Figure 1 (cartoon, helix red, strand yellow):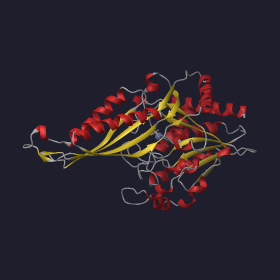
Figure 2: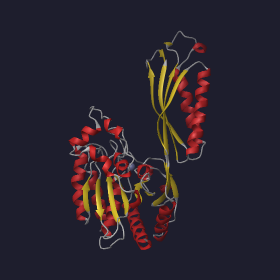
Figure 3: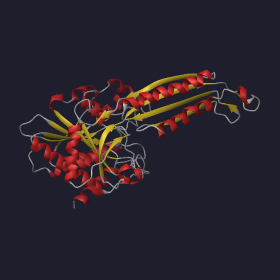
Figure 4: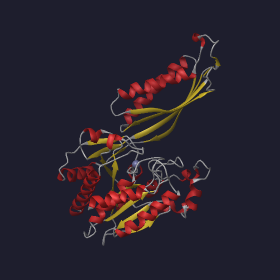
Length: 403
Ligand SMILES: [Zn+2]
């Protein structure tokens, strides 16, 4: 019964998408509006008060009679283009179901289930608008970010019927925030390899992105002798092979050169300029800083060979260590449900990165098939999601009885 209900909720949410493969639901689009049209009555059907805020978050609230303290649950509503049915929305619906099943229980604290508007940041290249607004670390500069049509985020919010001027007022009170707990699909293969339905998250990775421009010398591909060449693409290859080897041999570090442009990019011309992005992720700041030092050695080597290298750190986000007490409570709920506890770190960013500015955060991952996510074939077992729901419910009840 519950299984069919959750499956139906997930299906209906997934149908709020652009046509085509997978789920495409970008922030402040018609598809987003359709999802809100489905979610809002669903929240009210679950006995919760619902409110749309000016950052594009949909908030469902289970009020307590005599307490200002609030436990925050939820995840995000948006997807990447051609994404899956579970990334984000699963955490909203699982939390909603847990709270719905507790509708007869009076709790000594408020619960807010928040469906954050923009986590992926695909449309405006601006992540975590919703959660930074709630957490009080909103950067107003992102309102000037534009989508591919040139529309600014501020303008898109207004056209959606929201008022960006009110965003700073959405910040919750730190003293009243108990914590933020998010259920999310793992987006990796570890739980599946361990044959476990769910797992605890130790930390959400820190991320840094470097933009590197290498200038060598362009020239005729047939006439410049090999020993006289300064091929910028060959130089770029040094970064790529270093990063791959270094990340494979360093614990808890992943890295990628995700973007590479060469000029003039012609079949018979030696590449004179190469521009690449180099991204490093680790839940340990020291590991990332050490990687950065190694990166500088690669640069120094290329400079010694006569290349001009301009390297800039263009994006940096510190890791968030999940709160020990909240995670311990999740762990005991998990053990009581008969699941052996496994702890893993999140290599993906999540709303918890922002929510950590407000309160302690904890996360519960749900196994996904083949570790696949940000992909139309993203898949989970509904039973695993129900296990996560039972753990969350138990966590809330145990927290209430100790309150
Ligand atoms: Zn997500």
